[in-house]
Length: 487
Image (cartoon, rainbow, N blue to C red; front, side):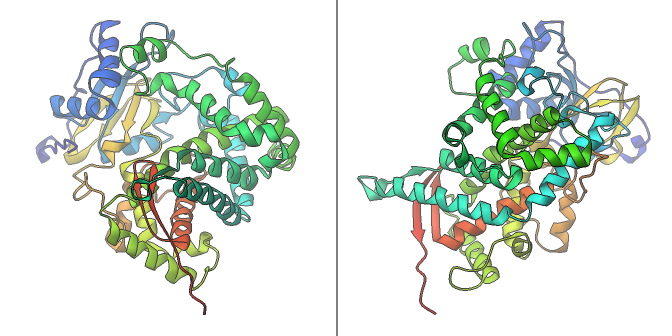
């Protein structure tokens, strides 16, 4: 459980120093890095320190650190409760320049020298243009979003079914949906968001998913616990120095030319309506496509399918199936579009609950513009100095027992009804409260509504096609095909 330490009313107005220590130079950051990646893991790292300091606000070092990350200051003020977390969304309090993934900024060579919109602060003159372009791109994409998603999901599920049917022992059959889902995400995003069909370029169609996986990994691995290779090799090979961009440059250039040629209409909108140069437009489109959308969905949607498909959740799947089919109608049903999924209350609540427990981006950062008082539950108040980097750990902030009942449990009905909807203000996955509105003047995810709707559409498509399914991790172990009866 997330430690919660309400303060007595008499102390409500008093500020206190932030507990915790960064330790001695080099050794302190190295110790925290090894705890974070090796000895404890990210979740335990934050939980233990909150418990040790009896505070949900404390000082710590965050990777990457020593020895070869020059110019990276790992010192942060960690925030793991829902009340103090909101300071990270206030553009008057925090500067968001170059803090997307923390104090470490991957080389601009990953985006051909362009500082893309997500690395800009709201006060940067280019931020409003790039954010407005992203919002415009999503608005235009909405016309074909549901249809392109359904087509891609149909292809994905056909491939998964084929794998499942090839199993020599049907009783022990399983088929991974991870790569088919990534291919589904890539193809539908290219067509809906960029207006470019990967099938128009054989290399992009075949290798685009893998190029983006490598491109993302090279930027993010220095900040992520990977677990693919044993320790201490992971520390020595993956967490000790920035990973080079030249490894993926040929692949990125391939995608750049693909967007330039086949996504020319989207690029033209950026140039003519938002005053963005062609090169900056293409690099921002690729970042939105590859990092924000493909990267985010590749993390979140597998968790969603896995949670819904867990053995023992038959009743949840039955209720979801009934809701989906009631809204879509009989037979093959109508389109599971934006309007339809807004009527699927339980589906939406389930999606919000997965976002609460498994946010696609676990850490959010902001650098204090000035000295200010950070307020937590029970009147607790902490003095934050100008220039200090705040690090919010969402998986604990969104399991705050002062806000959520049974915070560590998966409760798909949590956000139903008036009381449930009131809790949406504490769902922070989008770099802002779920009740907030993305705009050119803030840093909230431009696709906040689209992400939720897309996840609901995926659930709806699963129950349009299947009466039931089960998963073991990221593999389907059962797919009971729907039997359509003649009307």
